Image (tube, rainbow, N blue to C red):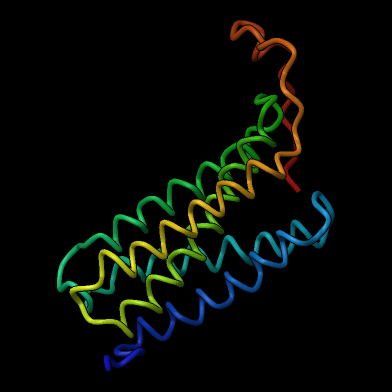
Length: 175
């Protein structure tokens, strides 16, 4: 059996990942838009930043940049898709939809990464693509179904023309 915490970086990585899992789950089940939602959401984002920074420093599994690192690249993209619209909410009418998609994808990816980290240590390496990646893909499918089933937004009756996007722009203080 492989050693689970093989370096100081991996200790920080695991601690931040556990913090992200707890805070991310709490954000999912809490009332949206409230002060606690924003506070716990900030804890989630900060812990995810630490998880991602340390993920790019861990090469124990492959000895080089591998598929797990590509998952971290995707996680950076999901986090940005969830965060940038919040900063642009005064000029982006669909900011909440993008926030929902990005953050939902981010936490789904975190759950999938947890299964990847758990399964590759307990099964033979030749099973990696079947068991480990199979579990990760199952998490993504379940996550996509849940995000779709709980989609809180009615369809737009008509799209907003792009030329009116900045009309009436007023900078808004971020909370």
